Structures are given as structure tokens and as C-alpha cells.
Length: 348
Image 1 (cartoon, helix red, strand yellow):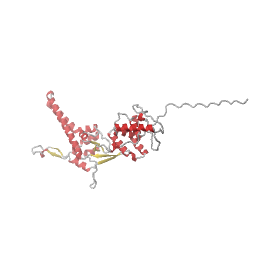
Image 2 (cartoon, one colour):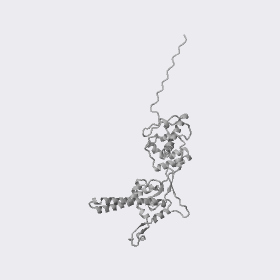
Image 3 (cartoon, helix red, strand yellow):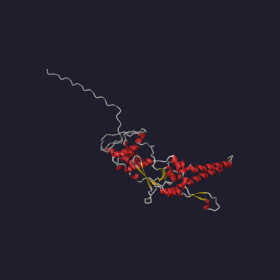
Image 4 (cartoon, one colour):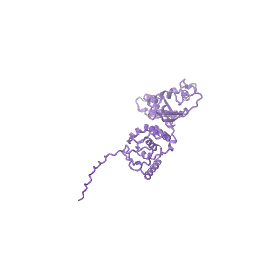
């Protein structure tokens, strides 16, 4: 709960086991209400469409009226209780309303929600909609049915919790955040031009998830503040599985692979092409310090020419082999045994 002297913080900070901190913009009640009303409108439209189809098929059904009524009751039950469960499980914490208003439900530790969390937070939505008002507030002749939600319980819970969680979120361990791209990540340029060459080896079918793209952008923002050893230690947690998936050599630099993934994810095609042109220019103007390297990607694409051949321009303590050289397959020829010198002829 929030203390009376503390200010309301609209950001949630999550630290991963790799010591990487994420900051999420929390969605408040007035941001979540339009998404909820949009979802209600979608469910009402689906229910009316079901009734319309049932009315069209009514003359052709043997038990027309009874069958349509049963289908309407089942459809209302499914839309009321399973609409949110299905969409939040299938679309990574998003319903149609959340997609429109750029919101997402995630776990409090930053991970995507699972099916049980989606079910629990949607089943407890009815508790968050209390207190209920009767229909008699509109007409004295209306039946005394308490069906008008005020959502006071959910609003009070969101106001009193640090992460703006309603009762369903507290029980499921979830929170709702705003999906806003980080602007700083798009203005960065890798200073190591080898990242543009390595980016060509990433399979064209690879599409990073939202969490992975956010991790790469956050890593690039803080990369310059880390020393080279610390960069590789942090990047290895993400890069090692990807190196195996991409079919690269085991000693490929984890730091440079994340730079290459940043190039593929955030930079435009023109920026990538300009980076490869600068890399080719560097290759032609500098003498090799430790030769050329060759890497073959998972799809069998060879990088032995153009920008995928990288020449080491300098040897420094922080320079790592991004494109390690494969050991020679043919053994060297055996050394020829020394021949005895011809005997010297004596004087006559």
C-alpha cells in the first residue's frame, strides 16, 4: 500500500536475474477504462450477431425457438467469462480493447502471463465491478435487480496499490502496462562496424519478440557504460542460445551479436546498407592485423565475401573476434628430411 507521504509513481521497475532493469509505464484506471468499454462493445456486437444469425436460421430449425434460446444463453456465457481468458492467453496479455489502446497485461516480474493467470484475473473481474446498483435508479417501476456496476472496488484497489492492480491482478500476480516504444533506442549506432556484417548472418526468418527487442534496446543504451568483459558477461545470457540456433561458431562474440541484432531490429534498410558500405570501405583501406575470417550461417549462407569478410583493423585489449576463424581441415604437409651434403673430393 502507498503511505500517505509518498508520491504516486506511475512506473514499475523490474530487475531480471541477469541484473537488467526494465521500466514499464503503468496503466491507470482512466487508461484501462476505455479498453474495457471497447471490449464490452465487442462482446455485445458478437452477441447481437449471434442473435441475428439465429433469427435468420429460425425457420429452418426443427426446434427453432428453443434451440436459438439455448445457443444465446451459451454464447452469452462464453463471451462473458472466456472472452478475456482466450485473448489474453492467445495474444500475450492483450484483448482487442488492449490492442487498440496499446495496453498489455504482464506478470509482476516482467514475464508474459500464462493461462492460469489470465483465467484468475478475468474470473475475479466481477468482484472488481462492485458495488452494484439497482435498476430502480432509472425507473421506480423497474424490478429490484442489482446489475449496474460501479467498479468502486477495482478503482479503490488500483488507487491503493503501487502497481495499480485491481483485485484480479493481485490474485493473479499481474499488472497492466502501456506499450510505448523507447525513443532513445532508435537513435543509437553501433560503433563497431563488424555488427553490420554479422547482421547479414542472422536468418531472415528470425523475428525477435517484444521482450527480446526491449532487452536489446536497453542493452545498447547502457553498453558504453560497461567495460568489455562486463558486456560479454551480460550479453552471454541472451546470445549463447541464439548462437546455437543461428549455427554460428561457439566463440562468436556475445556483445557483437547483440549489436548485430540491434541493427536488424531497430535500424532501417538504408541505415544497414550505409553501415555495410562503411565496413567495405574499412576493409579496403586498412591492412589486416590478424587476417580474414569466415562464418557460415544456419542456412548455409557463406559470408566469405562482401561485408561478411571482416579484417581486423587493430589489436586492442577490448577487441574480440566476432567472426572466429575455423581451424584448417587438411593437415600440413610433413617436413622433408634433410639430405646429406655431397662428399668433398680430396686434392690429387
